[in-house]
Image (cartoon, rainbow, N blue to C red; front, side):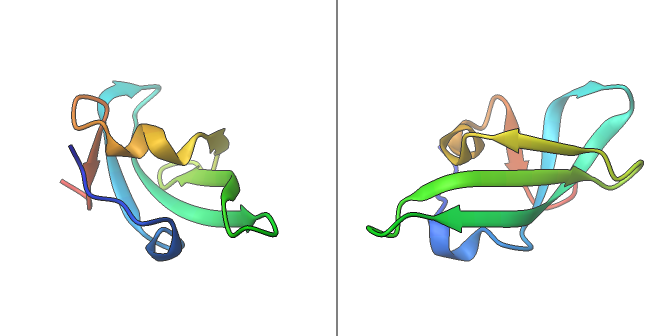
Length: 71
């Protein structure tokens, strides 16, 4: 399991295990927190084409879907 802390997510780099549309490398470009400092929105941007995707930040913890850094 990838160790991910919500406060260190912004601008972090990720590699998607299953590549779709040649989108393999991503950067976290936006995080929104609620009053209790829980993440309510996490936006990933594909490096190859700047497409943005809103994801559940907890999905980044699964090593069968995501790897930390660009690999």
